[in-house]
Structures are given as C-alpha cells and as structure tokens.
Length: 90
Image 1 (cartoon, helix red, strand yellow):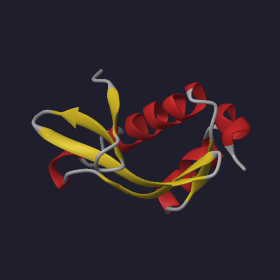
Image 2 (cartoon, rainbow, N blue to C red; image 1 turned 90 degrees about the vertical axis):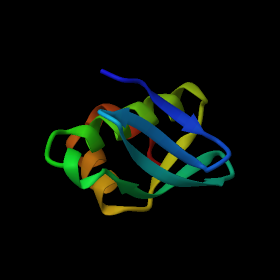
Image 3 (tube, rainbow, N blue to C red; image 1 turned 90 degrees about the horizontal axis):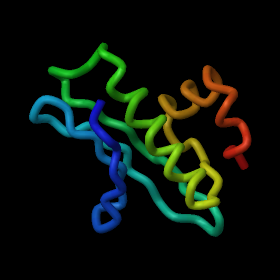
Image 4 (cartoon, rainbow, N blue to C red; image 1 turned 60 degrees about the vertical axis):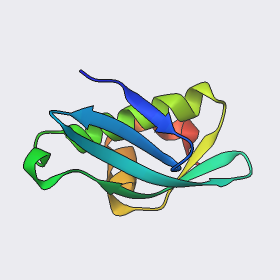
C-alpha cells in the first residue's frame, strides 16, 4: 500500500495509486484540520482508495496532536464507521 503524504503547499493529503492521485483538501483551524473535500480519480473508484487516503490523513492528524473536523460527507461517513478515530473529533 502506498503512503499518504501531506502536501502542505496545496493544503491537501495525497495518495498516489497507479499513476493517479486521490486527495483530500483541508483548511487549518486552531488545533484542528478541516477536511473539506475528498476526490478519487474515476478509474480508481470503488476500490477503497478514498478510505485508505482518509485513514492515512487521520493517522497523520493524530500524530500531530490535532483534531479533525469533517467538512465533507465521505469523512463524516468514514468516522461513523471507524470509532477508533473518535478521539480526533472535536
């Protein structure tokens, strides 16, 4: 599995898969990151790529001691299905 990275200059988490890039845009807030939009290339959809992306992003957010604010429906759904990240929610 490829690693998720934080592209700070574009303010998005990125996950390279088979020549495409899935990404999650974010905004910074005091003590938190607001994930505003996730997108997976159409050729990669339906394979769990976005879930891998969000999991990697949440792990980095946790490692940085920050909280997450779900600003898009996919992240809201992911957090509901993965209670192991409940400590990150504000």
